Image (cartoon, rainbow, N blue to C red; front, side, top):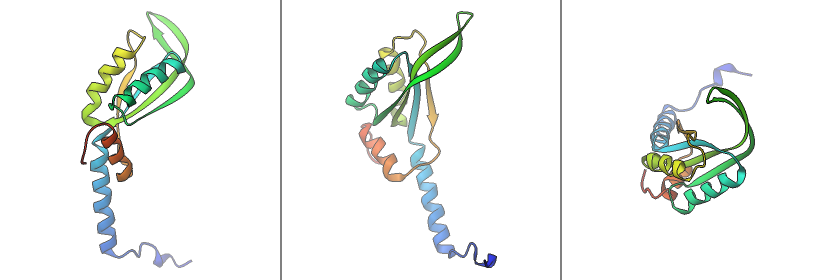
Length: 136
């Protein structure tokens, strides 16, 4: 194989790709993933459905049958939980965090906003539109 043939993309195409990549990263910063856990799949489904139906979240993924270890009130605990990943517009993060807390049976539910580094522009735009926010 001729190694000199590597990276022969014309500079104009490299520049366009870099600009597109930068735009995608900027759009990604306007989307958030929120991680939480629930004590059961059914409770997670109830909260997830409420978040999507209200328009606060574009999509909710539930991962049932997760095992968690943590210290609670000085004791090592092991629990079966359902993890939830909520896709929403970044500007709605605080509102979603508050709603998750309101809907949650735990006194101290896990609620973490995770930064989105990059993604497909069309998918990022869909998340924002479904979350009630228009235009990237």
